[in-house]
Amino acid sequence: MSNHQNRNGKIEGKKRVLWRQLEQSGCLWSYAKNPDSIDDSLLIEKSLLYLEFEDLHKLCELYPMRQIQQVWRERLVSQGDYYGIINWLLAAMFFDIKKPDKYLKRYGKPRLEIRA
Image (tube, rainbow, N blue to C red; front, side):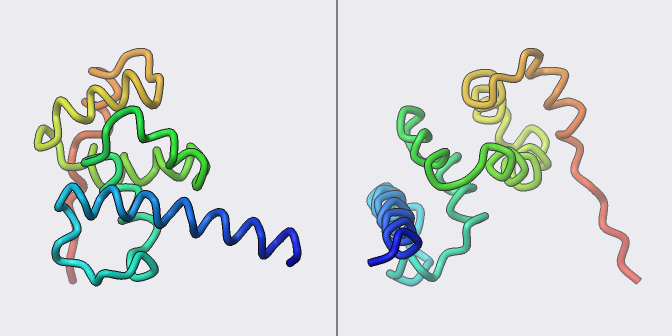
């Protein structure tokens, strides 16, 4: 087995661990019972919302922090106050943002879509 195949196998194994944890929490009831059916952004989003804080390090083993933070900003922070305390805790404790209130105020405004 090549290093590439071995690395991909480890990544898929870690994704399956996250998937199982999310499935056990009951938040994936509407998705197929196959971890391959969930895209990376959705796996990151659901993990940030539903996993225990100490389990979030598993995300960092799978994805770059930049990607995790981008998904967080686009999918959770953009919801404004809806995920208020969760976003504040993630900002301060997971992403190590020094002024979480200011950050969340800046990025927490939902973007308006203009449809033609």
